[in-house]
Amino acid sequence: MENTFIGQAELNQFIDKLAEQKAPGQPITSEERDHAAQVLDERITNAILGDLTVTQLQELDAVLRYNGSESTIENFFNNAGINVKQKVADTMKTFSMEFLGGGNA
Image: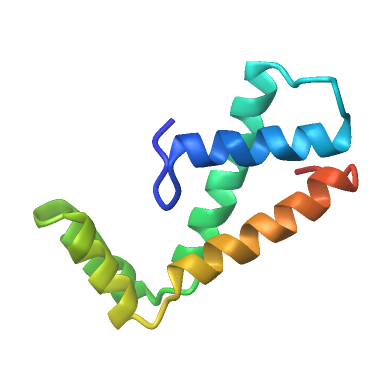
């Protein structure tokens, strides 16, 4: 799984902490962790890309195709007015509430 806006290690740590809070002493399986991490990563991506216009999505596609350096992508989102770090934090907070509350996270 390729994580777009957050690293795999950070996702795994976050999921492990949530699992420990939800069921102390009962570690989750790697399959459960992978599934939860994939769901969270998709939600983060959707939250960020969902704020872009069609034109901005086309511009992002061009950026990714021709010059996909991390700094170029970061500049693109800054210029588009998207606070990626805040979107990631907000999405993780919502996910954690659903996960801990027994929702469909």
